[in-house]
Image (tube, one colour):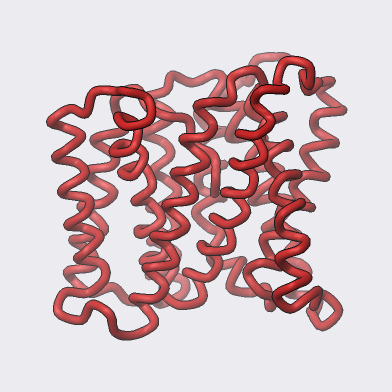
Length: 294
């Protein structure tokens, strides 16, 4: 494959698009499970075309032992999406996104257990301060009340499954990122179809043109096109630079939440958000784990 002319800008554009996800999800009147299914189907179709056009093959003979990890990571990805979409329904886009970005902290804490990596003093400090930030965004003195808290719990649940995808990806070494993502989408589809059928069925017939437009944007642009851009850029950029640029996503999401959607944040929630993003960012500027989930 040819080298990308400007991978830095490609990553900036992809992370900016990721940051606008919430505003489009809000305009799709289907259940979170149904939306996750359609997102996976649309993205899988587009990435299949991409793989054919770029003549990338999936080395099935080499990945036989990794199939269980591909299946599990695809399932985790589907659940991750469902919980994130639920978070958007119950709380603001900014609070859903900030709680979701607790995932790198979870990865940092779990890696020493799974991979016998040394947990440094810096990582421990980042975990403590990010956890304090998470407590702050739930609302000091008001924990457990209101839909915001439920939404934050959904966001944190999504973060757990996002972290699970990141961790499982460390076991998948014999397939490139884009073909791997395609297989994970297929795995997500397999688990999401029965889930949707058992939890309310298909409701696409009742969706208007605006809903369809937003669905196509989420499935094709936010997932299919943007995942291809994201992973193509990652191949050309140093890990540290990619980790830094990845924080454009939550910053754009918070900016859209406050300026376009008019969603408010309290002073302590702003402080909590800064703690989460600031300390996870500080932790990420050292060699890090590949992301894939949103």
